[in-house]
Image (cartoon, rainbow, N blue to C red; front, side):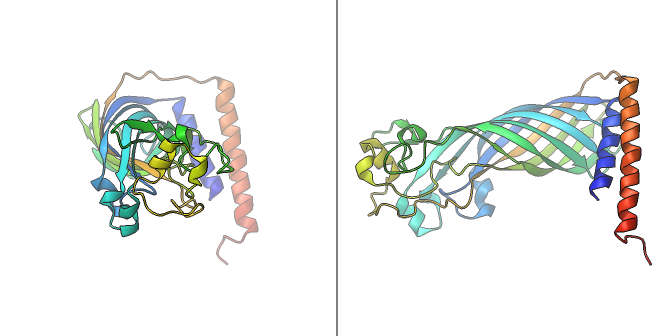
Length: 296
């Protein structure tokens, strides 16, 4: 199976050298979050979205596969007072953060799709890739002022109350998603899509581990760590450190096909691709024969 996929990918790369179809587009929609604060049910995520916008560049290798790079800006936020769990409502944490996302990935169309009349005018698709993003969780203090939560160390980061240093405000994610696209004439396409970004951090919301000893916290950090003024003991769970936070984008795109020029790759590159595919076919045949895939 891995070798078959490799052959398909190499064929796609070979196609890039012959006829690229480039698109430029915009994204308008919303961004949301799933983590330790606020709504505790995954299905409620779409109920708590904030405006988001972005743009992207797409290269259509062939009818089924496209490469896409995108840049999006959105806001994520959550409020314990909206939770169905009494323990969260009592805790009374809240936050918001801007998300700046740079993603690179591939779209796979279920049907042949190009922006021109003689091809299918619609297709569902799936998406996967990698994202790099920045964030900065904030919350209002008792005076109504916005406070950058990472800098004050609400869980004792950077103090004697914790072994952990302050978490970085940039990280990465492995996004995936699905969508539905429709072309309009020979130049324009529209789509609706929802992408999820499981991150490698548990601090999008500034909540992860345990309450720190307030004796080691600044007055502001102690206030922001426990706005519900609940009775706490150092080491009591404040969040769930076993699950990282997620963010998502949901919305609509419009893209425009820009003028394409055939790209002629060096002859040596063509020979390399052809040789690689033939070698891979031989490897695949060997695997099939040795692992008993042929019916007896």
